[in-house]
Length: 198
Length: 198
Image 1 (cartoon, one colour):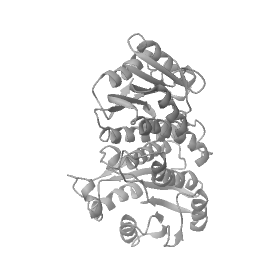
Image 2 (cartoon, chains in turn orange, brown; image 1 turned 180 degrees about the vertical axis):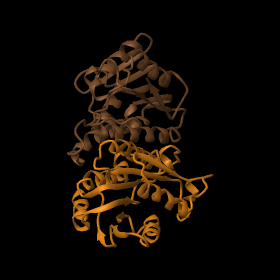
Image 3 (cartoon, chains in turn green, orange; image 1 turned 135 degrees about the horizontal axis):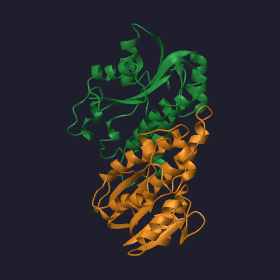
Image 4 (cartoon, helix red, strand yellow; image 1 turned 45 degrees about the vertical axis):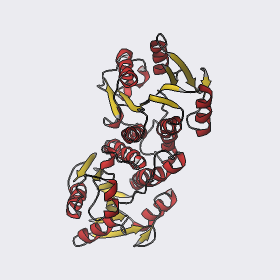
């Protein structure tokens, strides 16, 4: 299977690249490194990425920038970080990628527990996640040729201890559990699912 | 109670204005009519609306433009209609309105069943709804001075028969049930809730 991993240089992307490259052809995509460089906030950059990658069987996105910061000074301006990044970056990967993906292929996007379990300073991520999850359910009934789409929604992950103070009481998710969530989406048969990983 | 109704000239807004004006002071806001004219896709227009309205106890938004159309030609461009309208229009009403609302006041936004029950041609609304619902949960833990926020999420409403063909099998929601959803949010004590109305 030929799998594009967007965000391949990040914590999750590195783990998945390593885990899946034993059995599959991985195309690593990042902003500043990898097989192909792409900026998911730019539709032309996304198109260019797909043109370079050629036909593929699965796209995994682990890249999702959002604004983290205090509520009282949160305005439209800060909110745009999550809209252009985690929300439209991922949605455009699908809207454009549907024209390049092989039949029976799959898209796997990243959301997170913040959709339903908010934490202070993360309203932008809660909204972006909610948008992506609503989109995933809608896209699942629109995509044809057996193409599937799911979101993987982890809690705070063990490899990102810098976030632990923001998530009191959350038991960090192991990279093994995270990997299983992506395996379920890419190698399973489900579509339109938000795959919670804890 | 002084209640601002944004979208007052629409189907829902007219009904709520009529229902609530017996016991409350209603400020009707619409794009082209009402006590105050405002364009929710413009942050300066929203600020101007709040300056004109003065301190208030509740804001209800029933305005939420989104793109409705075929999936295969859906691009970033069409998707922006729901981002600027139903999503950021409503989110900006809260981010800006928090600085004008009275203590113990409330915000009530509009989403819809499409968040979890997608229909063909409505991916933009599913995403915008999901964003607003994630935002509502996050805002509920951030707002202080007892300020509350909820979303009302109806299925297709009986007063909009032009949408019935898009929602096969959905029993239209009566205006009385819809009104009760808004009453629950405005006059109840809940916060961070998505109030489903069927």
